[in-house]
Image (cartoon, rainbow, N blue to C red; front, side, top):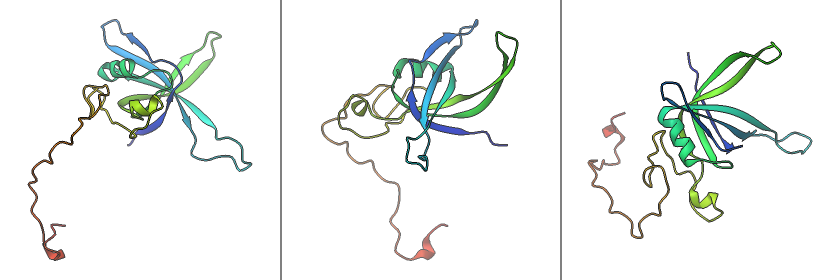
Length: 161
């Protein structure tokens, strides 16, 4: 069976970090995700508001580096939760339990400047530009790493696949 979901959108409010009785971090937040298509009558695209829960280091990462309006990419699983409201009615809610969270835009883009798109980060806060945060790249490019690959002739018979 497969239960995997990936969404990209903007946080509707600041993430809420809480701790369980045993001290495990859990962060809740809501992501506004535009639908891929516009209505046939030419109106505006609809937006879905999706609840997300992130546990442990992933939750701490979200609460530290994201705030209302941040573009976020969430990868995880869809989970249904049954509960009873204050009037005694049984309800069901769908939420995503996040496995990985990534920046959806660069810090420069979020601040209105120019810059690249999508500085990825894993759920532990490491990214191409340091431990979870953004720092400007070095002025001179780093030297290219040495390659262990050998050049092949144009003969397709030498390809390993």
